[in-house]
Image (cartoon, rainbow, N blue to C red):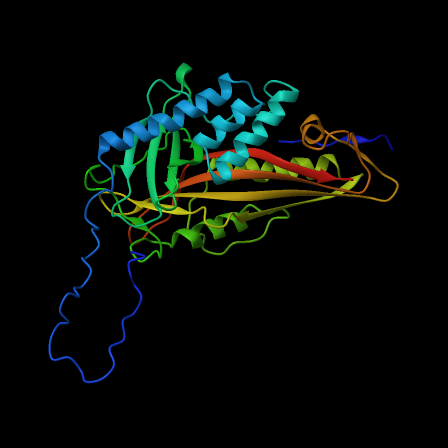
Amino acid sequence: MSPRSLRVTAFTVGAAVVLSGCAAAGPVVGVHEAPAAVTTVAPLTPSHARDIVGRAFTAASQAGSAGSTGAAADRARATAYTGPALMAASARSRLDSVQPGLGGSSPALSPSQPGLLALSRGFGWPRAMVAQTVPSGGSLPVLHLLTSLDALTPYRIMASATMLPNSTVRRFDPLPQGSRLLTDGTDLAVAPTALATQYAGSLSFPARSLADPAFTADPFAGQVRQNATTQAASVAVQSGFTQRHEVVPDSTYAVEQAAGGALVFSVLKRTDTFTVKKGQSLTAPKEFTALVPGRKRITSRATMTTLEFVVFGVPASSGDATLVAASEQLVAAAGS
């Protein structure tokens, strides 16, 4: 049988003070309760926030203009991105260094002017911003999540996803007021993490039935499922094929919107696994070889890992979540 080719689609001195002896009849002289945390305004002025966003996107643009590889490009990417987005940008640069365009189509990161849609409210951490860019040439808008985990960590782009055709994003509270980050789902029809987990499970291959999903059907999910079915069929003689999706830890953020509900960002990790049958082999695609130099044939087992950036609109109390943006990026491969 001829080999087949894989397809890739104060110290707040929160220290407790123990006073021994007789109970004090009144306040201890010189000791005062800490002031209440400010939770009703954004921690940055809109002007300052826009400057931060501008710097991040300037660095993203510099990473591209400096060439896909090299120390200057690496420094620029580390200034622009963090977490999953940094992993995606780094992998894309490696793929493009082998063959321009091999890294795939990715959200545009160097528009003339990124728009700031939302700032998280309050002076705690983590903090977040939502930005939107509109690529030139009539391409679809892209949503970006910038995060800062603590006082020592600057805002960087953590996730970017291209909006689906005909999708919309409802407005947020005014920038000076800021928008709450929702974590437990109390004010939403479905908890953000539960939504992301359920959506990830719905994408697995072989397919699993899902009773009463918390989201509507969307073209991105349909495409992922169809690509998995096609991939499995194309290598059926030579190899088994499975696909697993799981939520990347700490990647889910829900930003409350003005009329209730939230825009929810999450990142999923997709693992495609090929298990080659005895006596068979597979030809490794260019993407695989770019990430695993020298490996042109697969004779045993191979995995390809892709990050999927998804953004949902989630209603406040009832109704289904709706996917409004999605993008994916191959980030790793392994095999023998």
